[in-house]
Length: 120
Image (cartoon, rainbow, N blue to C red; front, side):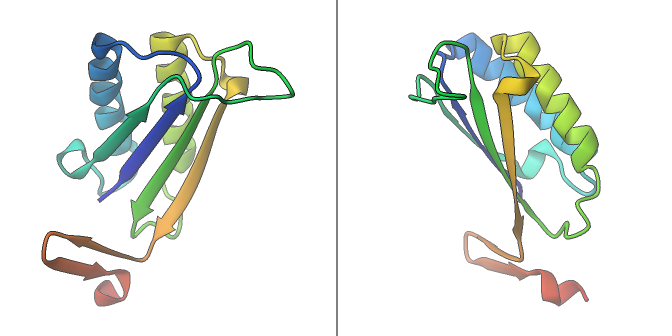
């Protein structure tokens, strides 16, 4: 299950949030084996993010935690698509968008425990 956490320095309207949700749901498909069906999203707007000593331009910090993709397949395409999405929806320039990737070796959904070692 991928989890994408978004922090922005600008406000996100409900309409923009729904648009982001839909577009990120499509973008995650660029990572092999991932889909919106299992995607968990969190949006936190109006965060106090400072970049290069300034607090003037819209900024986004994104954490993408992804299970079972140690080779990082699809990450370059996903990165490019996310950059495009945030530029188009929130006007955030690519140089003001930071994405942190986290490899998840084990995950639980409800009472189901999944460990990457189970698939080796």
